[in-house]
Amino acid sequence: MLRIQELKIIDILRSNNIEPRKECINLKKRLLFYNLLLIFTIYIDIYGNSNNQEHGFYSFSKEKDYIGKKFAIIKRECSLCGLFSNYMVYLGCIHKYLLEGYIPIIDNKSFPNAINGFNMTKNNNWELLFEQPFGYTLESVLKNAKDITYFSCEDCIPRPDEYSMLMNEPRKHFWHDFSNKYLAIKNELVYLANKIMYKLFRKSKNILGALTRGTDYIYKQPSGHPIPPNVSDFINDVKEMDDKFKYDYIFFSTEDEKIRYNFSHSFKERKIKQIKHKSPINYDYIKADYLNSNENIIGNLEFNKIYLLNIIILSKCLDIITARCSGAVGIFILSKGFRNTKIYDLGVYK
Image 1: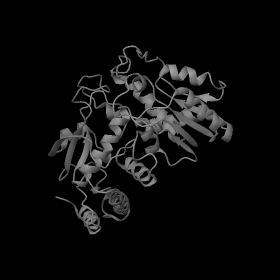
Image 2 (image 1 turned 135 degrees about the horizontal axis):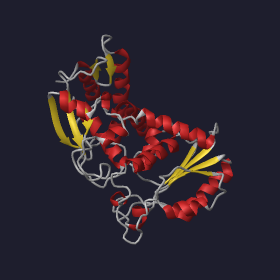
Image 3 (image 1 turned 120 degrees about the vertical axis):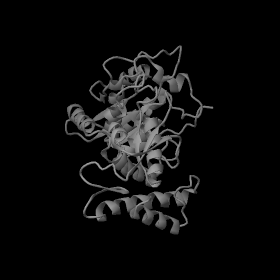
Image 4 (image 1 turned 180 degrees about the vertical axis):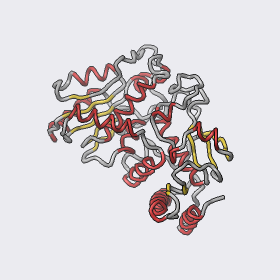
C-alpha cells in the first residue's frame, strides 16, 4: 500500500497530466516530473512525521525497520557490463521501484559477472563501493524482511545515459541529487579520493580533468556505443584548453595503456597527474575482446576501486574534457558543475 506522502506526490504529478508509472512521456512532461519528484522528496525529508527520521518516500526509526516494508531485490544480469553502465541502469530501476512503493536493494552476488569474478559469492561486492538505498544491505534484507519481490533490472526509463543527459542541466541536477540520496558512493572511498587529491594537487583547484576511452571501444567498436575521439585530436584539444586557461595540473584517466603513453609523453611530466592500478591490464589489442573479459579485471575489486576513485576525482576538477561513455555520465552525476566542458559527440558505432 502506498503511503500518504507517496499518494500526495502522485496526485500532484497527475494533476499536471503526468502518469508517473508510464515509461513513455514526452520530454517536457518528463522534466517536470523530475523536478516535482525531487522537490517533494526534499519536502518530505524536511517536513515529514516528526516522530521518525525521514528518508525519501519512507519513514524510518534509527534502528532498521523491516515490518510493513516492501523490498524489491533487483539485479541486472549483464555479465560483461562495466561499473558505471550498471550504475546508470540501477539508478533508473531504483527510481522506478521507489515510485511503486518498494525499497529497492541491488543484488550483485547471485549471478556471474565481472565484478564478482563470474562466481556467485557470499559477499555482495557492490556494497563495498556503493551504499544501498536507506542504508540497508542485501544480507540484512534477505535475513529479516518478510515482504520481498525479485525483479530483473532492465533498462528502466527514465535513467541517466550518455546520449541525452550530458548537456541537459535539469537532468544532471536531478540525477546528482537522486544518486546522493539513493545510491551514494561509500564515504571511505570519497574520503580516500579527497586525500589523494590533496597529495596530487595540494591546495590547487585549477585542474583540468581529462577522460577518454580506448581498448574495446576502439578495437571492437561495439554497436550503439559512442565513438571516442582520435587520440591526437584529444591531445591537441587538451593542449588548446591548457594554453587558454593555464591549468596547474591535468588529471588524466584512461584504461588504455597506448593512449596513456601517448598522452603522458605529450606534456611536461609535472603537469600530468593520474592514478592507476599497480599492474597493467595487458589488453590484447589483436584479440580485441571486451574489456571486462580481461583476466586481470575479472573479479578484481581493486581495479573497480581505482576506476571509481578516478571518476570521483574527475568530478571535482574545475574543467572537464571527456569522451562520451558511461564513466563520463558518472562524472556528471557526481559533479556539482564545471566551469568549462568539452564533450565529444562523434556519433555511435554501427
